[in-house]
Length: 281
Ligand SMILES: [Zn+2]
Image (cartoon, rainbow, N blue to C red; front, side, top):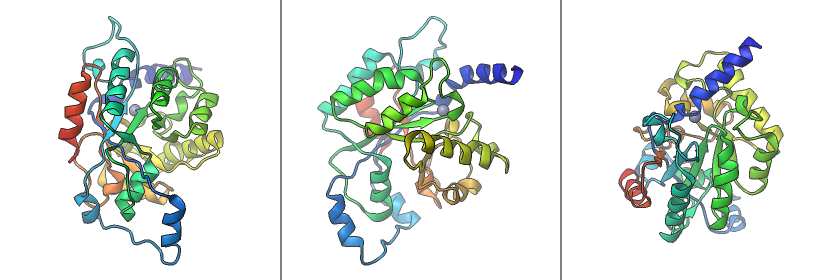
């Protein structure tokens, strides 16, 4: 019980911990999947080199955490991670009005690794940390515009107060959103021990695959923190790509350091528009 209590306290800190850095990206492949398959069925697709991936135009990826009104007890810094629903709604409407099309990680992976086609003005909208308001506030807002998102779940939080339940996560997956991994309890990836590859990676993957009935192939680093030496291990553990925050990508493994920007609660829709254009070249 003591362990559970301390975990709970840890989670409260984690709820806003994800946002020390900020920023995100997105893209979605359009085109006819059947046609793509037909074109490539005779020869294996050639994977892009790291240099080729790094030279491509980056797809913007946005990162959100809590979507709720600010409280007096929130720190000023926490306002980067907490976006009031009214602001969130304006920002999503701005993306739709500006002609952005949400894409999903498979489309981004196909674009980066195999030169797959993307729709005009592609963007990925992602959510970290399993917060319940992502289901109650964000998902209905995305639906208004036909947008789909990516939800990076830390599995220890599933079913706890203020976090999403298994049923809600399954509903998101069924609705065409992507459920992805954000570790078991938000442990810093750069401090992983050998045991953590089971506890923080393999078990959460199994948990999420059991809930959704779909493969889990994308990962977001807690706090956006990663270390170059361990990136190849994510591939060995079944991941196709992983997402950082707005720091520089790894030159050897760019697929495992895809950049995102946080959309801070303090931003206007116009601020966000300029930030996207400045951050993703
Ligand atoms: Zn996080």
